Length: 136
Image (cartoon, rainbow, N blue to C red; front, top):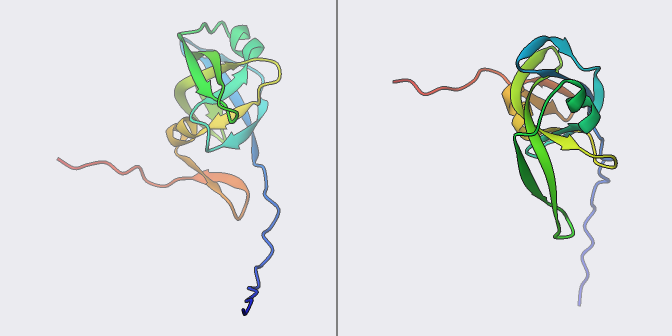
């Protein structure tokens, strides 16, 4: 029996991209909460910010949402609507009220709304380019 050994290049260490995220009450557009450091997580649909930050803006839960965890359990958290500011642009999106111990995340839905994408080479957020629309 012949064993063939393939040469596999070493993968670079995985990087974690973090950005400053600011939140704003959609009905009170003059005041933003202080920026918080959030991990960009394209595997998370929603953005997660600390409850104290969201409540400090006067935001209230719109509904409860359930999130599946890696161990199969379900985590339930309230969500609200907020204006999110990142890298000089903003969008309106659902945001999860994070509890102590929860990660602070910038999720995929918010990234899409901001029209930003992750540049893996430069390890930063960049403009995603023109927004494609259907012509009538």
